[in-house]
Length: 219
Ligand code: ATP
Image 1 (tube, rainbow, N blue to C red):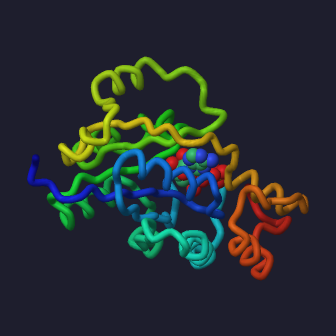
Image 2 (cartoon, rainbow, N blue to C red):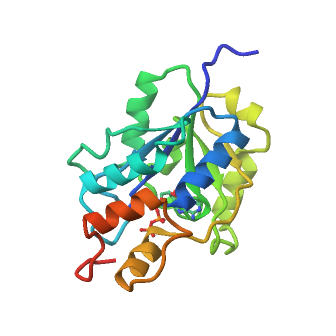
């Protein structure tokens, strides 16, 4: 027994657009990690991207449509309404003040684990949250020695370990490999290729209505 509150999940992304690789992965990973509710955290100005994202209002509207049938997902709009770049460490510091007794579980895909060591103040992130990592195809490249050392120090294999500490652990979830990315979807739309297996139909209709991802778009 501990005196901690229920863990809070956070899933950050550009969501340009949100797709099944986001929603299905985070739902399965949250179940495995024993996390009841996950805040989807769309960023305003992404730090890691080399494309200009669609307007925040569109990304937010699509995210709302994509999660409306999942009661365990909700949207935290703090980053998307900010006009400064979205650094995870800043958001985590704010969340920790609001939730001093809740373990914070930050969900990422395996590609993001590979790039974690390039995140701003990456070591300090572990003073604020755990990481729950979803499988992602195309990320089978061997882990760097530094990442291996990080996992040796921090990996846990039971969700109890996530709920008995406020922060500092890594949990590798066993989620279905979903070969979907937002950039691939943007390419499909521009080339008039089907996106049925990748996107919620409501999101697809929104993209059509608002004529998003048309030929002038930068990927
Ligand atoms: P882009 O293709 O524009 O780079 P993306 O599809 O990677 O976008 P993001 O919004 O950048 O989507 O991703 C947010 C988070 O979701 C990241 O942690 C990423 O690793 C994870 N993620 C994205 N797609 C998948 C997927 N298919 N399976 C598992 N995790 C995913």
